[in-house]
Length: 379
Image (cartoon, rainbow, N blue to C red; front, side, top):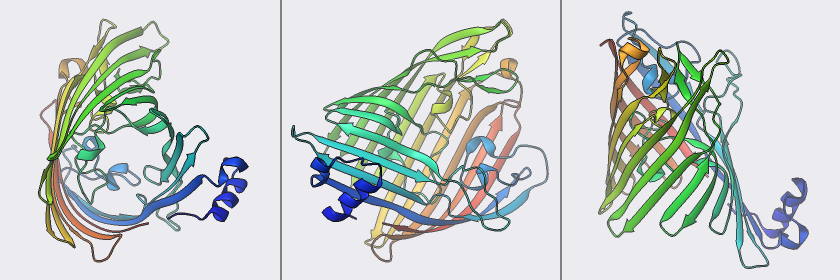
């Protein structure tokens, strides 16, 4: 919703004069977001998830239990996905437009519990500005294609095989081409997951998008360094790459969303870090882990108030047990179907059933069935 000029000037004065007086009349502030309530019943073939486990709030492939324990079921309800955003648009004297965007939600937030108040700390999602062809700040990775994310009741929906990363970056856009330098991070297997933060150079991402009457097609690339210094004689780096191809195909009011990803050392970029980017071998070298993912989502519009979605995602890693042990993840997949109902403008009610499975390098398997409902008001 737009604020009028007086309100905009008041907000500018009340926030450390973020907008100078000379620009106040040319600045538009908007706020938005949504309130979303989720309820879910989850049934596991091998045990259950502990209290405050993030996998109880939304689907995380690597957290599906594989323990050999008896099957179990759990119910959870929360509003953590609710979010708030604030944006500004300023017309400058040189004719250019300066934009800023800030957003936060409450997912994965520490410091809360379900005993009394169900209070949770906010977390940063986006904080960036754009000027001309440039974007600076934190937002979706340029390697990621946001348009192929499905309409799901779950937080992500195609989690297993999709690229899903937000981070600080400097991005340049020229027509259909985008190039960015982004914040690096390495996840290394060395007797467990090591999040090293030892990188000496940023990740390089690129994406080309071709838009047509039938939809669009994009190709993205990733080049990055994986680094590990354990302070005990190991100081290694290795190069990593990834390729992502995505498309959204319009079929009247319906659409089909597809994505294929492959890389060596993708690690944290795919499947919410189902596997690490590299493993430290017995000889003290870093060896990248190959992985691939695929996602497909079909949206069928039944009427102006109803839509039906079919969603599938899979992930596979060439993660040798001889290097990492029998407990590493080899393959995950999930399938879900949902019905979305839009009774009035800005309100969505959804119901979804999902089945997910995981296989370890040892051959051990586990699966999950989840029935989830939601109500959302967007403003």
